[in-house]
Image (cartoon, protein in one colour):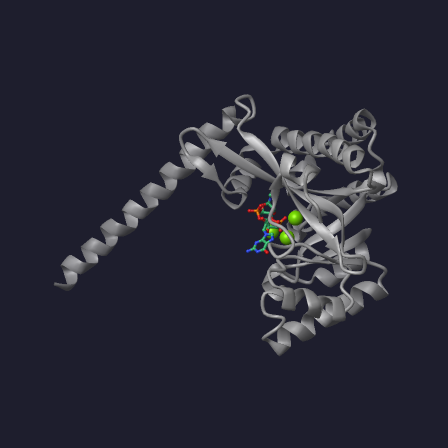
Length: 275
Ligand code: C2E
Ligand code: MG
Ligand code: MG
Ligand code: MG
């Protein structure tokens, strides 16, 4: 009986592994032609200023719909794009598309909106990155001060000698550096001191519990106070309820982003959005 069970478990396990490997291979295969087949689309999640209750910008979030695989989430395909190097052309597509949308959005709404773009570690290993961003800013006539680049500490831990140089050069252009998913991972405090961040985004896992959990609330309160004393703007990620929004306003948080205010939207819908 035990033996049979053991064997079954083993079979199950290898089947699961097979499925995972097959899925991975299929994603890699499909991703190679996804750009040329126009399968990627950017959605935009607006950020709301808690003082004015107005939209001040959005974050670009990549969506992939493939004929064979259907919708694949960024949490699944971005790591594979990183490993295969495809993140370089995909990342360029994101920068170009997000900034040309921003120029259309600013013109339509007659507002000085900003755009936040996520960058992965290997994009920083591409010596072309900075020039590509500069050229795209010129082409779209977007001011560097309206652009935010969101990085996680994965970028900072990727053991690159020139990361300090890259981040300084980006900041020198006037682009804002934003620390994404703050509070997850390790020792982010030293990073805040070492690199030229202007924005800190508190991870949604902390925001989730703030109205019911005293510890989460204390951590968020302390993070906001610390950020402000360092001159950083604070964004709360994953705000899903009015109660969370009220509490964050009380705690002096600057901006909120989350399903309560708005889900990520296709370009057309954001152009029609009445905040
Ligand atoms: P992120 O940069 O931390 O983005 C926030 C994620 O939280 C997004 O997931 C967004 O849809 C989700 N979110 C926003 N508000 C709420 C909320 O109220 N509740 C919940 N439960 N979730 C919320 P998404 O779009 O699936 O993206 C996941 C991650 O994939 C992003 O995390 C980012 O790290 C990465 N990613 C997305 N687009 C790009 C891209 O263009 N380039 C790179 N390098 N990474 C990207
Ligand atoms: Mg982000
Ligand atoms: Mg985040
Ligand atoms: Mg994230």
